[in-house]
Each structure stands twice: as C-alpha cells, then as structure tokens.
Length: 411
Image 1 (cartoon, helix red, strand yellow):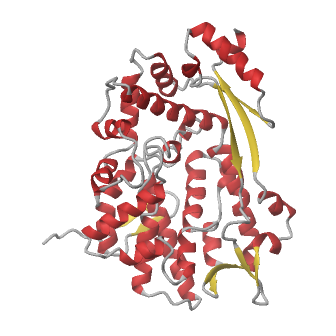
Image 2 (image 1 turned 180 degrees about the vertical axis):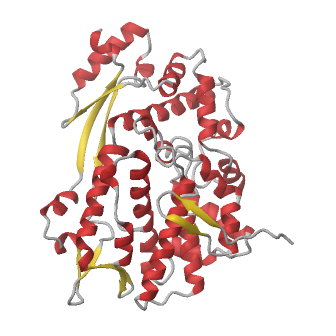
Image 3 (image 1 turned 60 degrees about the horizontal axis):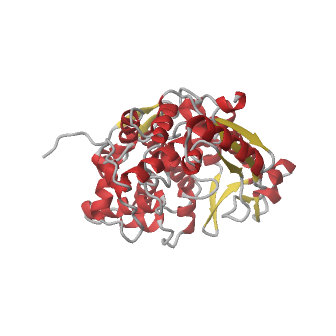
C-alpha cells in the first residue's frame, strides 16, 4: 500500500498556502490529464507584451479550488447547508473546469479543434476520469452541466461573479504586472450568500463588485485585448491554418504525432471518441512551439515567415480604429505585398487583413450579479448601483483593426 501523504499543502504566490483537502482530489491533481495543465499557458502569448505572464492553467485551477474552499466556508457560516458530497463536487468541478483547454488556451481555441469548445472537452475529460475513479465524479459532473437541483452551485463555477473570474483576474494581474486588474476576492467571497437558491452578494459589497467589473474591463483592454496580444494570437492561428492546408494537400511537416493527427483530421463533436480524447491529452504548448521552431526553416514562404514572426517577436503592424477599415486601404496594402513578395492573393491574406475585437465587462442578458439589499429584496447590480459607469460597462465596445507588414508603410 502506498505510504504517500496525500493531504498536501501547496505554496501559491497569490494566496499563500493552498490545502489539498482529500485523497480523491490529490489523485485527480496527480493524474496525467491534470498535470498536462502545467504545460498550457494561462494567457496565451501575452508574455510577448508582459514578460512575466508565463503562468499556467495548473496555477489557475488550484487557485480556483482554493477560492471555492473559502466560498463554501463562508456560505456554511451563513447557515447555507452544503453536504460533504456537495462540497467535494464543487471542488472537483472548479478544479477541472479548464482541463479541456488546448495549447495556449484561448489563443488556439478553434485552431486545433475547429468545431468543439474547450468546455465540452473538459466535460469529456471529467466523464473519462469518472469512469477511472469508479463514479466518484458523478455529482461534480451533474453540477458542472447545470443539472443539479441547487442552482447556486453552478453559479459558483460559471457566472459573472464566479471563482474562475475571481482567480484569473487576480492571478493574471499579478503575473502580468497590470495592477488595474487586481480584485479583492477575499472581500467578495466574504459577502456571498444564497437566497431562494441563487447566489447573491450582500449590498455592503456593492463597491467591491463595481471595482471587480471595472478591473475586468481594464484587464481586457490592457492585457487580453492588448493590440500586440491580438496580433500574436492571430499569427499563431494563421500558422496552424497554413500548416493544416499544407498537410492536407500532401506536404509532410515536422511535428509531434498528436499535433500531426489534429492537422490531418477535422474532428467534429460527433467524431470525438475516447482515442481522440487520449490523443488530445498528449497535446500542449510544447508541441506547437517545437513545430514552429522547425517550420521557420520550411520552404513554404507563408509558414516560414509567420513562424519567424512568433519566434523573434517581429510581428505584423496592427492599427486600431474606431470605424471599419476601408476596403481601398486593405487593397492598397495587399497590392504592395503581392508586388514585393510575388505571392498569390490567398497567400497575401495571411499578412494583410482586418478584424474587430469586443469588450463587455458585464452582460445584462446573461445570469445577473444579484445584490441582496438590506430589506431582503434582490436587484441586478446595474440597478442597485449609484454609479453611472456600471451602465456603461454593460454596453459592448467594439474596436476595429487592420494588419499588415511594417515595411509596407515605406513601400
């Protein structure tokens, strides 16, 4: 019998000590599916902007579990009954909520798997683990899918004020150095409560909620949607797109077997079987970066040029605009590029293109953040707040951009 002490304590730079509460959770953390998260970047290629942003999904998942432990503790103190089985289900569900992320997290969301969302892959991983652990994850899966009768439990995992957002804002702010993203998760958690089976936050914490939403908005503009992050992530998706095109037309590209598999096959939700899941579990950031290091020397101009851009941080110029770029400006840059590099129109589209980004800190059409007022009534945070800025935060802001090689400005 194994003599390993499974009730470990981990040291986290954000919260200090994180306790692994039981042997089941220890064994889940030790599983190869979860250990893979050590090799999945939390913020994609944002480290090209903020050099410290090298933390991983592994850090984030453990942080979320820690916050969930605090939330359960708070709710129990306020006489919300949560059984041991429900507690375990909540901890497992939040621990594994991101286990389905592919390389570089959101940066490659639809590059490796074009038609399957990471949340669906997380669910498949959880179901596979449930089989391996003899049904021990059944309740966690029920909660994760929103099928458990206690509605507030899903809101702790997935809502506009959940443990996931509370951790990633605080953690991403810490590692990137973008101080505006720092949120007071402890205060927010201490003010949580449950009323009529839904998650609420007590009125005295309304300013903390406002700060949380403002921090989210600022983190999106300053980090997640920073123009260099945007162009780096688009370049990464273009590399995979070109690699798939070449592979499917018969060109053999040097890369790992799992990456080769996903470049050769377009997997739909219906085709995703146990073998596909296992192959996906072997895939991480290292496969992609290793392939890109090889592809920088490939004879294909598009693949080689894009790969060098990522490796040497010599990216395309991205110009942000309030309005859609004109078709004529795009055509002008395309013609210059074709003249300079003798590329086809389809090849040029990898280097000259336009797009848009959207930022909405609070969505009034989604599950609301409910404020519990002193008289016992419940109000949406936008109505409860005396800050006009919250109404503005609930409106989506769209920015447009155009991308092209820097050298075309002089050409």
